[in-house]
Image 1 (tube, rainbow, N blue to C red):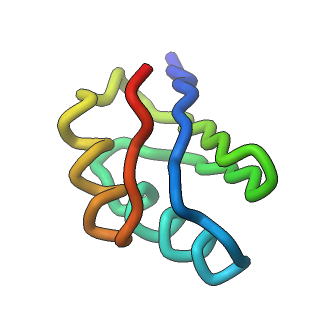
Image 2 (spheres, rainbow, N blue to C red):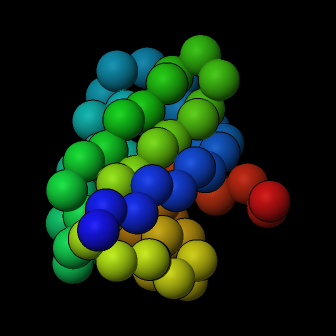
Length: 70
C-alpha cells in the first residue's frame, strides 16, 4: 500500500532547486513519486512504505536545502 507524506523544504528559489530536491528524494528506497511546490516549499512524497524523518532530512540536506521542522 502506498504511503503519502508531506514535508516543507526551506531555501528553494528556482526550478533547479525543485529538480535537486526531487532527484535526491526519488533516490530513497521505495519512493515512487515526488511532487514539489516551489511557491509554498511543500513536498509530497509517495512511497511503498513509511520513510524515516532522518532519511528524508538527509536527502534534502544532500540537495542543499533544509527540511522544516513539523
